[in-house]
Image (cartoon, rainbow, N blue to C red):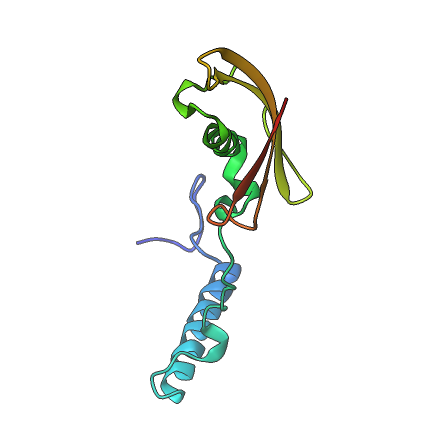
Length: 143
């Protein structure tokens, strides 16, 4: 038989605070079940998840495409303006910068001209749009 006295090292499981928490959880569950039944099996509006706005993920925005993608788009646009696109070589250049809603990049390209001579020109590139899907690079070759 056990006596009502605690022995050294014994712990009491529960207590008044634990009992109150358990009762509150049970009452909360009961309240939600009654709301569900009263609503004819429909979830009450206050339990519905909030509607999300349909925003494009950050990666789909123009800024979210990153400087690497912007650099590739600029180089592709520069190639299209050369007489021999396959001869284009781009030496190391800085990264494109994003600001004022657009990507900007200045660089150099070397390639073969119509006479077969190797030439090097500078270029400016701006990419505008609102998303990656409608990004439009505009290139100006500087002589």
